[in-house]
Image (tube, rainbow, N blue to C red):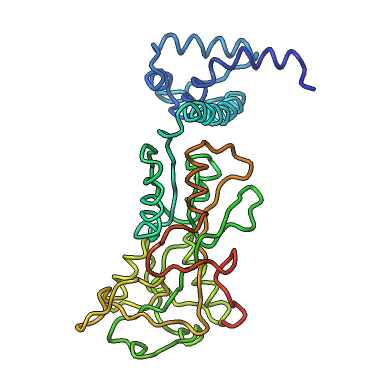
Length: 328
């Protein structure tokens, strides 16, 4: 049981949580005061009163600003954490009153913004036209970090974070990965290609931290060779463009673009891998999180399997990907 004096101290500290967090973020009393919309002298007095409450200084001068002391950093970190939960609770209360006008903060990999995310949102908005979306794109690593920090509600990623007990999720669809080569490449006429045949080829990949890069590295390792990385990018379309320019080959999801008489519309030739390789696209959220009504409704819609996700996707066969790694 928490000591009563600690509870009393916490109650007296609570009104200044936002100030502590703002000072920790800005390193300046004036900027923190502006951020909160209070006069600078008021902010200074509150900091001094807080120091008296805890019996230790919370800030010390540092150049033209201030920096937090060890005690100040401890309280500021707790303040930021508490405010995140408080903001989420306030949002939940508002949306419980009127869930039809809620907001979903959705994170996803860049390439999923082509068809999967628009298809899911379009289907959802038919029955929830008032729900707003904030869309955040980035690498798998960045999206999962944002999810853990509470900056996004849900993320669509691949591979799914199955080894993280703090996250929960559901597999949505499988997406086939193929070898993309320029039309002039010696592999361009092949019907299929084994991963081991890529040894010695110059590869164009996404940067470390992206799920597709992880799959590519694992694929090469399982085939027994170290990949020769020619270029690294942050978007699959950039990687595809580099391949089209003849700067290497890449393992990418099928583009879903048609092949015209003059050649592939994507500018690259796509060759299936042997055995076929798929990645599983899944939706993840923080385990035990109290999701708002709008977020819960969108999650249920995404997991319902009622939406056509576009070309290149199929119903998932297993909650992980890629498959048949032992055959690589």
